[in-house]
Length: 178
Image (tube, rainbow, N blue to C red; front, side, top):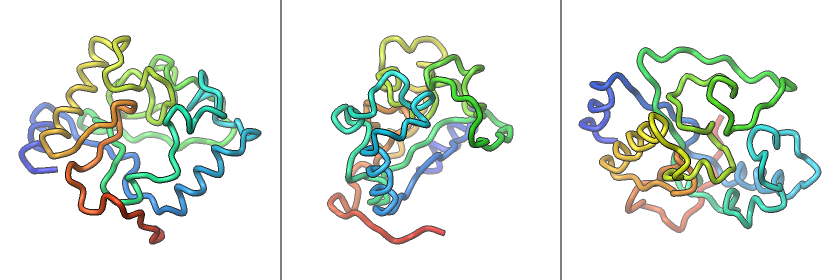
């Protein structure tokens, strides 16, 4: 992201928070294996409450190849400064649908985007007409900052951006991250 855009967000009292960036192909393969295991629905209540797991590929929420493995895609959001720390997830804690009101979802220090990150639901589409007011303004603020920096939004996920003219469009790297 060019300095001009970063400073533009800073002047408004915001910064970026990256959820996910480079992801080795082996991690994508593990995610695909999880998606194919229709019996494992432990996270359904939070991340895909209104979608049958059997439809995750067909509906485009999961793919066997990912721009994350090319090092050209990232998932991110905006946080108000100063950024408050967030607590870690505790396995087994009750799950709340990712489209529930922000105060009811898992605590996150990001601005309200109308859904949580990684919400497999049409409400997560960047320009979903049901998302209005401050939530829509927040999505558009992120979108405009990322577009000025040379990234393209995946319309189905408000958080997902790929570098325009990415250098390795047909390569899927698999070096591990420790």
